[in-house]
Image (tube, rainbow, N blue to C red):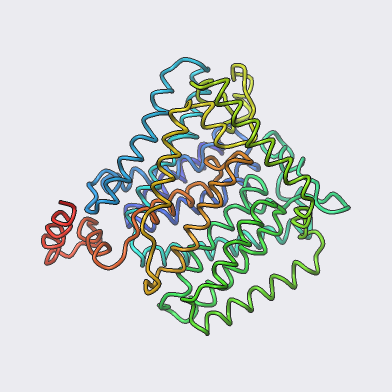
Length: 455
């Protein structure tokens, strides 16, 4: 019963917040996404698996008009066509009876359920990303507090052992003492580390903009510090590489003002000191083993993915190629095929057609026009571009890219943003089509201008 109550709270809470504004709905959904792992572990019922799903449904229902309304920019219209294609392919596969219907339903969720976050990201204006970044800074601090408590007192005080926490208790490979990787309030350590990495573009991008309140600057810095330390706590090596790339891009960005560069360097010094004095945070040093890195890459890319493409060109059915399956449905999977590659999973479940669609979409996204250096959102846009690119690359050597809660939602939202980067006139055009932002005096003129530009 407790699981159903939590789902109801997530659904109606997010719906109510979303009716107030799109940003409030996103903030509510991401909040439930952050706490999803620890709630599911401690309220161990079947319904608890759908807490985040309920929150996302509440967000979609509250902003249905925003999701279905016509875009006023050419990039937005093309994005909508891509999203439609990416959703239609797994929907068609759902009606091909290759797996148990419930297994295929879970597979459909893993391929299509979160894709509307691409549209949501494209609907947001720069100032709205500022508000989302501010809230993510708060959530990061909370996640860091829980992670620190687990680091000091033990994971077992926060996550009881059961079927959904089995991965957490099998991830005890940190240091000579075989300590646990820290999951904080997430479903596992990788979800913790990945989410922390992908919050950096939003928080850093908001931090360098004009601050609405003096205390916002300190909150942004604290949120970024929490994110960086959280990545080292999670002991996820791939996420360390992603963070290192983002830190390098931000450090050498010429758009950061001197005062912000000083604050950034202070954060890096603090992170370096903390990590350098705690051996448990240094699992990333195993990346110096070139033989291990090469064998891992070759096994996932050169063998598994290519074998899947050759042996199963039409796939094995939704849910049968590695989609994260709830414990109560694992025995229903018909002849499961395991691959250590997210792109291999997509090929196995949607065939070569699904893999080709995603390849075309990502090629389109990453070849779009980038923000100019004079744009206030330049740093956030650049970090989002590199962050999304490196996570797409990680899809070759691991799974979970499109089923990680709430990291996947953040990645898709950022992909939608960089595909339809909004500044100046485009921001105004969005406002003309968003009821809570609409100015009736200019709405008609902006719409005519935008449609004329498309024509």
